[in-house]
Figure (cartoon, rainbow, N blue to C red):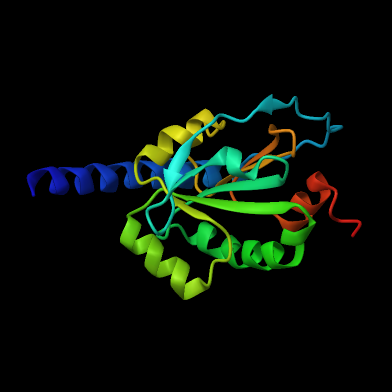
Length: 182
């Protein structure tokens, strides 16, 4: 019982820290002017391998979705921007899932809260439970500031082609995956 209590305290502490970093990021991003400059393609790197349990407790491996465009989304039920973008991900998964687009949610949250939210929202893509370990996994994928939501787009060759701290737009997803022309 004491271990479980400490685990929840650690999770709550990590959530608070991530929230503070995320709030600071969005506050600063709002205040700093954006200077337009030509966009150069982001260098591609191979995605780190990992496995996590899904909502039913079955271990899932990222390599299961090799050969597809993957939108790997780190999120939490307590994160308002995360909750805002999930309905759009559900829509895009339904519309483009048969066209080689795969969303994968990585929840940095309590398993029961995630199961309840996924059921209520009708999430139609794999949702993996990372709890506090998801913070380290997100860092391995390039989330240096601990922001949520944080998304990574991976091409069918397994290379990371984009990272996004904050809400990921449908336009960016469709443009980077080449699905905007369909």
